[in-house]
Length: 131
Image 1 (cartoon, helix red, strand yellow):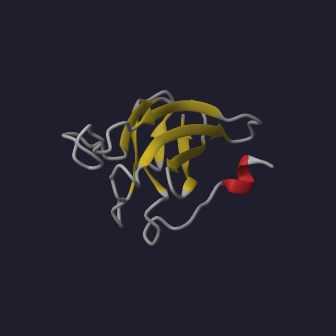
Image 2 (cartoon, rainbow, N blue to C red):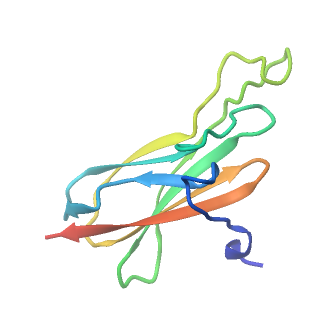
């Protein structure tokens, strides 16, 4: 079995689990840019003890390159848990992460997220790097 066998994808406008990547379409080589990845942008995802997004990962695959480069992983650890019971806690985290990155080549940004009930989800967007 491979990750591809269990990874799900879809249109984030109609599926609340798909990670949404917000990034410039074009950037100058070596120029810092902010990439934001979120889950539940169009259709809110629950943030409860029973049903939540556990993490978001961002990676980059340069054009013509063989390997993917891991850019970052953000975990979301507060889902309303409490000694008083599920969803009674004082803190919740929304599945939104920002990454500040610099690229030297054009390629694809890839995002993955994990829902504790519905598994792993992925999406990708191209980024053009200009000299």
